[in-house]
Length: 240
Ligand code: IPE
Ligand code: IPE
Ligand code: MG
Image (cartoon, rainbow, N blue to C red; front, side):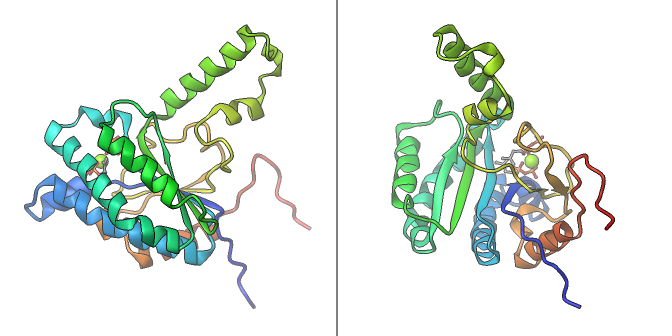
């Protein structure tokens, strides 16, 4: 009997454990972030091949600015270098890149790289890769509330017209379906300010593997775990 394989439309990943991976090897934390780029490549390719349409990767949280300056600078530099190096490849693979987060605090170079990768890959229609970079879910919701309040104050809508659709349309994920599967590597079981609104009915998967060790096999295991889940959305399962 053939097994029905359910591929999630949208997978979101909290890429965690780079620092511990480096520490285990007696290396600087930066080396862990560098090693993590390889996992990003692997997962983007595997997701596109599997038929996933949206892949969101949590790369840098707004809270991460509080890390030592040397580490923050190294992450920014790595982001720029990766964008320069991967743009053409991603475009050729049909991957469209969107950077999701507040466009504040970034250097002019980082802003230029954000612009560059989004432009280079704009035509991609196989997989949308959303990179959460300077992203905070609570901040995203505050900004959405502000924009809705401004529209009400300007007489463009009534307070009672604010429904789930209007809120969703005011978030940074506007136009992107909610994640079906949220993966967090490294054994931590928390969201750390990631997609709090959007995660309402997501399935969660917390493998022990550290992000730099997350490979094709680990990705396949995540898909397998998801396929075995029973999503009920608060309803009673049809027994017929
Ligand atoms: C995730 O790895 C990457 C970022 C947050 C930028 P960490 O750097 O958080 O790694 P651990 O959790 O310290 O091992
Ligand atoms: C969440 O990981 C942010 C990213 C993976 C980019 P953190 O390592 O920053 O989260 P906490 O501090 O363990 O909650
Ligand atoms: Mg961490």
